[in-house]
Length: 163
Image (cartoon, rainbow, N blue to C red; front, side):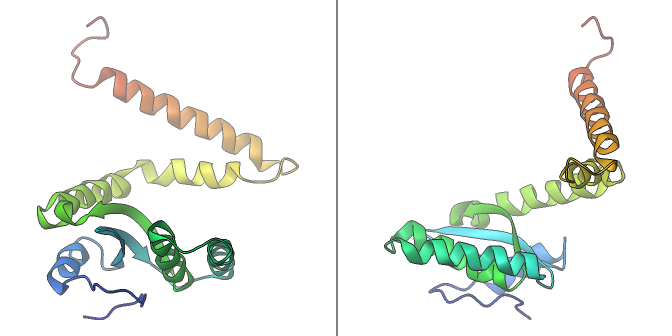
């Protein structure tokens, strides 16, 4: 099985774990952080912005003394340099029990069905500069998306709005 992210650590994810996650999404990687915690993430070819952010993380980590928490941050930054984008963190018992796989399957399904990615588009556009004329439209679209989502949450499992 091909590993796209090579991070120096004591533990390697068993191939059975990776195979089960990759049946859901072939771009998934699983790396060991520290203290029994694993990071599940997606791999894509790294761009300059992601590399720059990872290098800044590594510089901040190098300034402080290395403790167990910093080891996990270091591994995460090294993985980010190679194109790793974290999705979630799981302790080993959640991976062994299958909870992490079920959780990832649900998250992947919700990600794929989300209203044509409208929320993500609106969020990206809302990060435009204040001078950009598209900013107002993006913020309006974002507010409309949240209102629809709130209505869905409020009316979930109700037959009538009075209930």
